[in-house]
Length: 259
Image (cartoon, rainbow, N blue to C red):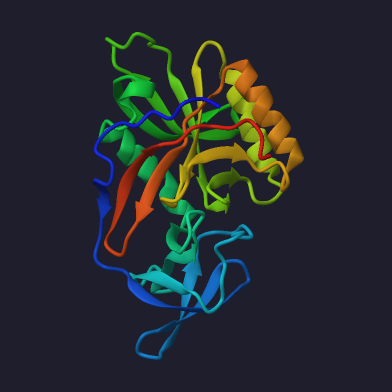
């Protein structure tokens, strides 16, 4: 296990927003939809930007938080952002379930300087840059190091939103992911001319370490360990989720196996 390194002021707000609306989850269905009962008793249908099984955080009858953003361009005015789930440290913990937010969170953490110690100073960030075999993949973030950086190789950075835990160990993936397997192979492929970085976005504050979810996808676990051996860097970043903000909670160590 590598040692955790913490950059920046822990608990400092990284993103702020108008207070989310709280309610109770009635049901999630068709992967993208969730019915939620608000405090007023009204039941609304919210968009669920998480197509996975949401292992450990999908609890009908549990508290959730929604963002209300009506627009003529949106079919649904509500988006499911957070869910309250059992904590690995006892009690309950708010978890960020909107997978579309992970890239923005990691970018904000880089821009705030929280990853400077592990990535070095960054001069530019680009999103969704094509790369890989036949250039048919897109990297989440492509980083250009500052000219004064000790390692000036470009950085290919892949983000994985992570919400599943066992005790206090965060795990990804929580289901078989051929796409995730492909991303690991593509990251290995950019070495050694470039740096390859996998960033598990730990979307809950109660996490002590990160590991591949071998029990959900054994092949991903094998490729994860192969990637580490090849030189892919893993930087698990932890965040706290609140009604009106998301906070930086530092880096976490990596374990090579779930067990």
